[in-house]
Image 1 (cartoon, one colour):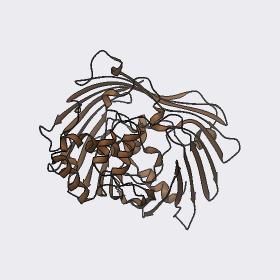
Image 2 (image 1 turned 135 degrees about the vertical axis):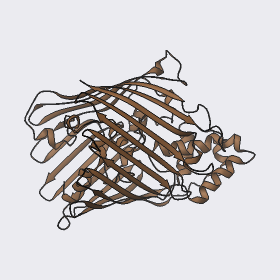
Image 3 (image 1 turned 120 degrees about the vertical axis):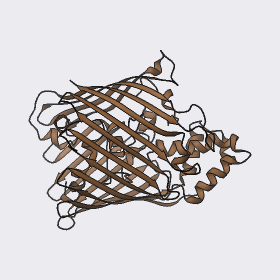
Image 4 (image 1 turned 90 degrees about the vertical axis):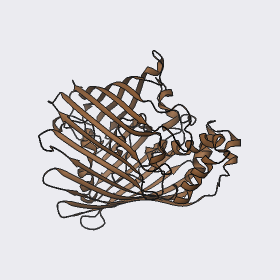
Length: 463
């Protein structure tokens, strides 16, 4: 792709995400872009497989202003994950990619032994074919990602409902570990431009939002990734020297959204970027309540009591940011996020007032459902926020990586903060630790969540 977008992607922390302990290990991960297998010589099976133990303790708030519907998040959870990514190119113009995990888990809210102790996810499973030079065709389950921003990607249209039970809240990690959608994707690359078209058909009815404890054991979860027909068309082209914007058109059901990405490097250390999307849609509250009724999660009487407004209007989403990289392998990001359909300060006041009203106990489930819906869609709850991130590779000593981010809600100043450290003992063994906190007063976005502190301790073995 062109230099402007590539500059941001090269500074992205996706390859330095939590739990990926060393550059040597990362170099073994197959490149995702379909152009790579199609232009490479046939070869043996390549794979990245690892076994990881993850212990997740949490500290819950003792009292919430708006009662949280059961079940509460677990106070401690133990997970054992077998993760594998396989890549095979048997022919010069044909390649196969498979990525998934098998998980054993135990928690204080999950009975043992039951089927809920076992989970199997197939994240990706697709074939890539190069019919002629410059053209690539993918078919199968594909994790299609778009966008140049780090903390929030308005043009990443296939992110909705794709994240399942993550170990980290880091947006860079969530982009990599989510479920792909079953689709057909075609790409054509020529000298000064590239064009991509993807179609993901509806294969199942929309599935309800479930607590982690109730996730299915063996299920492709097509009701999450393929519940409605979706079509994406995007192209990148050289506009002027060093600036190559990307434009997108996305159709979901009967709704159309447009988007754009542009980035520009300033010197060798700074990259400025903008990601924007817009389309006619309802507010976050209305979309959540409508989805709750559609999937049978919310009674019509409860939704009616909240007096939803079904009016559609043109809503915009944007990420405006910059990144700065130093020679010491430290990279910093700062972004402003706009999610126009999200909660304003007045919406937050109304949410708490409704929860504290005499009918609050009757409506609390629906109030928290709105927030669960935003999380499920991987969209911000609030309209305006600031995101800051730092990532330091080989910090202090070789193979030690430190990273952290803060997501600040500008309506009330509450913050989601996370710090992590990972150290590669060798090319085969690594240790990691993560700590996240929801900070703010009881009437704030992050300060009203049931989890105050949570952590993850991991040990990983590659083989």
